[in-house]
Length: 311
Image (cartoon, rainbow, N blue to C red):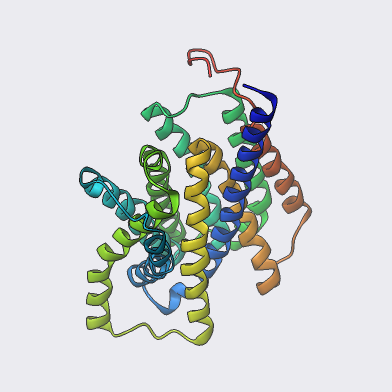
């Protein structure tokens, strides 16, 4: 490969990592907003609003570009990915954040970097390498250090563990999406694929949201609550996942997922800005470890663990 081509490839990977990192920061705000507003509604309705708004933002764009075309054989698999990766994930996340804390929940969500690696290796999309394992380990260590004080100080009531388990289930769902979406992204534009999977999730959630509205009444959100919902739908769905899925098309799923390590850091910053929580030296050290983890994960994959294929 020629020098300019290599440079373009390296620049493309940097842009893809930057897109994934930006999406992760938006997701951190989404976790904070979900934790803020979940007391005013239910997890099913909030999930429907999130991806209903997201689909409403993206579908008109892809229709205008005439890229919203899907082969008949892919209808059911793509719909399943949307329902599991977006719908089920968002419901589990909302239910979990009702019981656990935003910093703790966002930390658990970063387990998808490890889970995505496992699923991607299972599918043959990636190989285990020292760079990937060391990078995800550094990122996880940084996260644990950055939020350890707030997590310990918050206490751990019995319900918190149930919330933790629900959030972990959400991480499993989106990890499956990360690993299994890539074959379709080789055939379809990222924005069109994102719009289709979001629309599938919204359609699946609609009957449940309507049923809840009929039996319990419409959500009674205050203006700040509706602002949080708008953020969740626009930035936590349309823009966030638009960037995320575009990055999945450009680089391996694990390199995308490790950027989610920025998620709890964003949630902690929002907590400091809006709730008066202090930013400690642990937070700064943790951020540096997370940054190191992202860099290491994106190093050339030339060395693999014993027993693994060469990368």
